[in-house]
Image 1 (cartoon, rainbow, N blue to C red):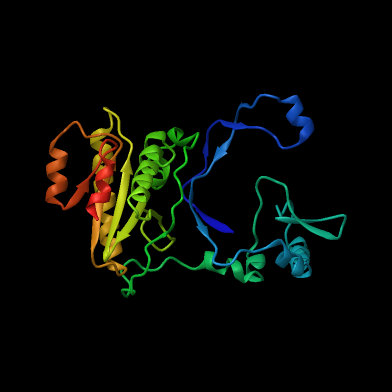
Image 2: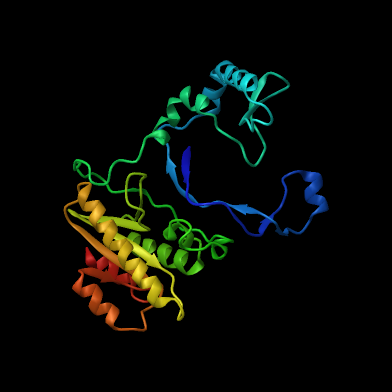
Length: 280
């Protein structure tokens, strides 16, 4: 139904995990932190046409042929994503990590859009349509704090922080209450947190979690991000774009309001998000 893109390197951090196997669940009754690997994902992005179990069953001989071909030229484990239960019924493999060979993608046109390269940011302007896709609520990631901000896209790392997630979801709620539709990005769009449209104006927001110790760095980063998002959206065909910077609380330094005003960036925060509805 959806696909994601790996973003950044694998990191090690504890994982609170409970096994699915009934006997093991009875033995490990209380989930406890265990060593784990984490990989940030950019997405998920909905497939325009889901790849169903019925379609996979219909293509199972093609899938079996791919497996045989791989077994003939590869040694060791294949981490193949399917197996045949009882030798006849195609089922998804139950490992927690599988590989999806390019040959399988080739016989599954539903997955073709995931292979399309990202468009050039300064390519021909398209006719703008509906910005983004259905809003994906922000989730809190258990290991976000274990990753360094600049080993991957800092926006992806920060989205796992509670202050960021709560502020983003609250802004989405405010917009819905005002009759506006919060949107999440599509693969070809800049990596914004949340966007919405009102008439011919597109609003693009960058949310920032801040503390007394990192406020300056976080607001610098967020301002640069949202200025870039505004520029990118204008280049792909949205002529009127309003940039919105929304930290989780008001900045202690009042000069941030002056700077945002000078750069025509709307500065909201966790205490006045209801003003987002008035921007439209």
